[in-house]
Length: 533
Image (cartoon, rainbow, N blue to C red):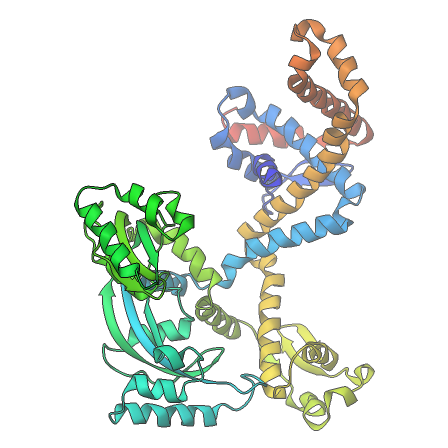
């Protein structure tokens, strides 16, 4: 967090100009810095600068030159080659590039879809036929044929619950007949969610695949979501006298007893009893069905239920607060994050991939792949694999590149592995080219690169040095004691900050002394006129 804040306040955004009119503003050791670069930084920071002195071009130019001198020293010290820096920069780079890998229109549709499904809950039961132990890579046609025959039995009149108990390879189906209960967006695997929301009430879905196998499902209920709930409950665990005990507690509540006191005194849920029976907030699918249904039957805050039974025992539940589903505007950002983290984001990724295939010149070389189809992978010798198997624009990929990829993969067809390899390299190529095709991305990337470098440099040159130089800090205090007017321990923080400023001034003075800075005065005057200075 400290680094991110530091980068945000550093004048380090660089946007190259391709204009023929761009001119050199100043140079450091004959390395030019252009007007466009200075203007980009100056105009970016202008809205957040309040005092006139900081807006003055001459003053700002001095700060910018100092910044450029510091960055130059960071490169001279090869801080950009330090492994920790490279790893951290790569992390920021991946965060920065992530939005470019989504199709915005598709992403917006998925976010809206997720919100609509959050407002409506579906209840479904399913039958699962699992993939064999060697996984999804096998031919699954026979599994689809099997699940289709099962579906036909149900469509022809057999009871879904009975068939699910008989044939489903979901172990819980033996007990619950495949019942998944009510759920909404993000609660289930996306293909299952899709099937549930696209199947009519009482209907049987077409077969569909998930990472576990092939499924069919039946939609058994549809209802509007009521959001989340805060509740308190009293639990009496199952015993020969549990019904008598819960009825007695209910009668006391009816006679005016405090729910919280009854929970503290009688509830067998000892974790919640000590806080008056209060449970953590929950939503659909997080409690057993009987409990959730009893909560949903309560419409007013403070209302409590009649005794009801679950597998845990007998309960009385009190509604403390209901949190309805918020508006789309309120939930949009959270839903967008969830969509990006979920498997449904692959739909957006596929759209991007399709666009890249249309944008780039892609050529495949089937002849070069024959060595992999005719030989076992272990028998292929890497030093002989120099033929091109794929090209994306000017970039070529050799047989040995493909071999490195398939060595990491489980058994699958070469054609399928090659398609995966092509898609991965296509996205990698796009990432490599982005800095040349998107000025905003290039500018922000440079900001992160130099901001991180400068943070590490400041830590080495100023912050660590000041924190470790106790004698220097105290000597600085003694020489400026009149300014502080208090004992050292009472103003230690202020002294440390001022001492760091003093170290930085001395450092910049040396940078100016050891480097040659030449400002193009004519260009500077012209620039100042642009801002009426």
